[in-house]
Length: 367
Image 1 (tube, rainbow, N blue to C red):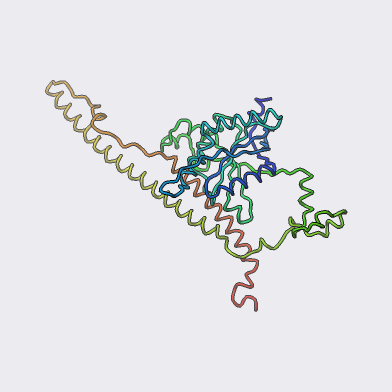
Image 2 (image 1 turned 90 degrees about the vertical axis):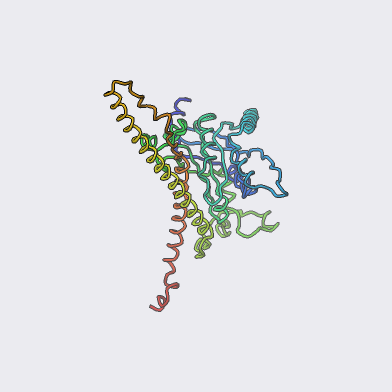
């Protein structure tokens, strides 16, 4: 049975509503500092059910010059999932959960993000640690606090692809190795669909909630029949708030981050081009030295003298080391993430603009 579960490919992640609320609360309280925690649940064939979550213990960073360093706190929190102390804490927590007979299988970890900026080396190292050391069938949940604050819940699940795990294990991200493995930036992460599960009792309660804040008498007298329930305003019903024509400020900030990532990509490209120029110069020097050594050996052979070694160039010349391509791959994947966000926002705004274009264009309403 265990081999069958291991061979089955994960196709979806099911989250309990309690898990979603706990993740949202933890990430919102620590924002803008990164929040991380671990997930527990059950693995059922192709579905991964997450039934509970727990935040990792926070480490207080001493203030420097009277100021609190948010970057240092974020870096410590981002590296928390693979810390030894937190791994021990996680094992102890799972042991306690098993004693009370609840779901206590390791199903992954979660982290917070700001404006979709989550594709970085910390996330790769954390997920690699979980998939290789703890449990291969684990996921990384990413909760975008900024996007969720606009009224649209952003909670996504990711895994590292098998091809990227193989390349990361070998720690070779050179141009030659990437060409042989045919690894692209699109192959780094695999996204899984996320489903939120509620009990039938909770679903019935949500649909019975009135839209205004109920008074004490209204709380005591819930709708007794289906007819009275239909007359009560339902907060889950469609409304006109989604038709707001104002440009989302999240779109402007995402565009700025997209431009910064593109500039970073150009910087990485310039560094690689500088390496290629340095390599070409050194190879030209080596070729000239080898040609000169061959001519010297030919002259010594005519003079019946011992030829000089022709591999001495390895000691005289030092080829520049090729810069790693991992940062370039991650930055390209982050650029793709920003581009998808901009595309999603622009599509919604464009559709609403077309719907009301008669009131926006001058003279269109008169025609």
